[in-house]
Image (cartoon, rainbow, N blue to C red; front, side):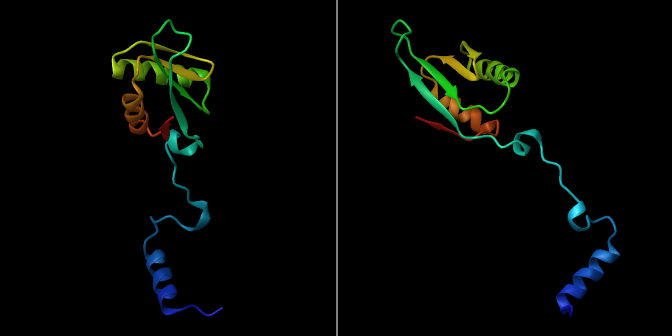
Length: 114
């Protein structure tokens, strides 16, 4: 196969710069948030069964319960509210849907308010 002028120029550039990554062997390491395929999270306002009080529920996590619990702790501290993490869901006391959405997007998650 005949090389075009731009291909020859590119190959000469790559040959003269050995520090550049070569071929498919080179990989760029991603941080943990982008390396795992995280589905979109759902933020729900729940009113029933809470004695007239409302709660914000975050569902749809594809991470283990320990990581959900750690994220819930960071979220509660950031929002200045109570809550818990059980069964792969995060419960935040009160109607904090917008604040939870902002927190999750800053943490690198895709989320939507339902």
